[in-house]
Every structure is written in C-alpha cells, then in structure tokens.
Length: 416
Ligand code: SR1
Ligand code: MG
Image 1 (cartoon, rainbow, N blue to C red):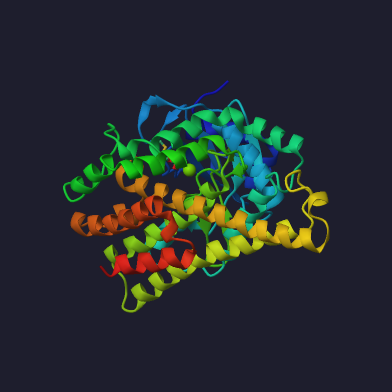
Image 2 (image 1 turned 90 degrees about the vertical axis):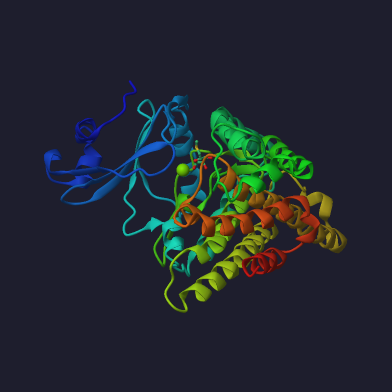
C-alpha cells in the first residue's frame, strides 16, 4: 500500500485517523501542511490545525540527498518506531511522543516539538544549552546500559539483537560512508577543494589510519553491546535552552556503545572548530568556545558517572554474575573492573569521535557547522584542524587517556 504522500494525500490520510484529526481540530481543509524535511533521507511535514500541531515523517524508498538511483528500504521507518518506543520507555521525556505509526506507509506521527530547533543550527548561532549535558547523558546512560548484557538476561539481549537485525541496509550506509569511502577514491566524496586536496590525498595514503579505521569498522560491525541510536549527531537532537529531545533513530541497531557517545563528542568538537569561521558578537566567541569544550568534558564525565551508578545499583544482567564477586574482595575487584570497562568504552568513543569527524569533511554527507562558513579558505582551516585532531585520536589513541586530553589538544589546534 506504500505511496509517497504529497500534501493533499496526507490531508486525506490524517482526516481518516480519528485521534489525530481530533488533536488537530477544525476541518481537514483548514489544516496548514508544510514539508520541512532538510535531512538526507526522508519527508517531514508539519501539520497545524485550530487546536494543535503534529510532525509527520515518511520514509522515501530512496536516499533523498542523492535521488532514486540509491534505493533504501522503507523498513527503516519501522525500526525507527521500535527504537523510539524503547527510548521513550528508558529515557522518558527525552524523545518526542509517538502518536501514530503506519508500517506499510513507512509513516510516523509524532508530537510537534515547538519552539525546539535542531541543535546544530543553534550551535552555529553560538547558542549555549545549559540543560543539554544532563539530558543527553541521561539518554545515553539509560538507553545503552539497560539494553546491554550488564542489565539484561542473555535471552532478552539476544531477542533485542534479533529485533533490529533486519536494519542492516542502514548499517551498510554507515559502514560505507563513515568507515570506508573517506579513505579511498569514491564518486560521492567531496571536500573543500583545492585547499584540502593535499589532506585528502594524505588520508588515502595513510596506512596507519587505514588500519585504525578498519578496526573501528570491525568493532561497529561485530560488537552488539547495546541498542544504539545509530546517528546521534547534533542534527538528530532538538533543543530549547531548557529542553532536549532526541529524534530520528532510523539507524538503530545493536552495536558498540562508543559509537553513540562518539557521535555526540564529534559533533560538539566540530562546532568548536567551526566557530572561528562564523560571525560572532564581541565576547560571544570566547564564551561559546569555552562552553563547547566544557560541554565535551562534561558529556563524557557525566555519562560515565551515570552509567557506573546504574551498574552499581544492583544490575542483574547475565554478564558479571553477582555470585562471582561476593564479599569485600569481590566488591573491590568488581569496582576495579567497572573502571577498566569505562576506560575501554572511552577508547572506543574516542576512535568513533574521530571517524565521525573525518566523514563530515571528506565523505558524502557534510554538516552546516562547516558548510555555512562561506569563505572556502577559512572553512578549510577549520576543517583541517578538526581532521588533524581526528587523525591523532584514531592513530595515537594512547595519547588521549582522558577527555581533558582531547579538549586540551583541540584548544592547541584552535590557536595554531
Ligand atoms: C546517505 S545518508 C547520509 C547520512 O545521513 C544520515 O544522517 C546519516 O548520518 C548518514 O550517514
Ligand atoms: Mg537523520
């Protein structure tokens, strides 16, 4: 029954869904319908009636950014719906409310987030979000911990993996666009030429980097640690100064936790490196850049603290059986092991942060943090600094044992 819904079809469709029609109010003819999707994949409509508004997302059978030559399964809309349902249960209030889902139409109706904006746009405008760290770290700690073997029985965990296993076409997009194409000649790659031509060639010839990105790719493909959002960049987060809502989990699958954490860190760091290229009011630049780096540090530190608190609060997953860590000796050993686990997760997150940065500068899908810097020379300077840090984080991971080492290196590159 799938068909692409244009404005008139959508109006008729919604008129036939009593709860939604009642929520909107007035007659269908009075509803204002606008297509506002500016992402890479889908249609997004805002519908406003006399009483209320909704957001409607419909998957297209192809990649919107490229066109019909690149087909993409509609099933991603259902995986997104499943992931949003799970996230709403684990991190209530941090995702939009689900109002209606039609699997054959690959269509989901959600709460209209107003006056929220896409966080990336706010960061380009140097807006600070005081509640962001608390919200995003709660979202990540809750969704990652409670879908992992630390909290679930082996059977529950394997059922979770199976429920999302069919979303492999979306995983393949990530495997190609993040972990492979930026490091080879690929038709869809682009970068700020001619300034970054040399750096692009360096990356294609850097075998240490190729080994590092391939290890990360393997980790992404073969480590079903938890249910990931799968695309947790600042374009998948809507904010006001006091509220945060995570949207768009269509890339959800069971993968390595560090991939989601790295997505958040990478996009904050890119906002930091892009900042010198944007017009800022006097005093605003230093304040914003200071806030961004402090936010990078707090995202890791508060995520790690919340994750460890959940683990320490009597978790009953099948990994680390309580019976193996009895008594004082066991408790001390388990505590040391938890610290070691977080250190491994940090190392993963740092690698994925680097991978997520390089793909936005040399791959197909770029971000407005850099793209809105009009002067290509200034843009290239910002991008090259971000790539220098990313390359070091990927290849010399031992030089970044703590998050302060990342922000310290970012600061040095910013002033270079
Ligand atoms: C072809 S899709 C390109 C990118 O858009 C999405 O937001 C994901 O980040 C994907 O890699
Ligand atoms: Mg998206």
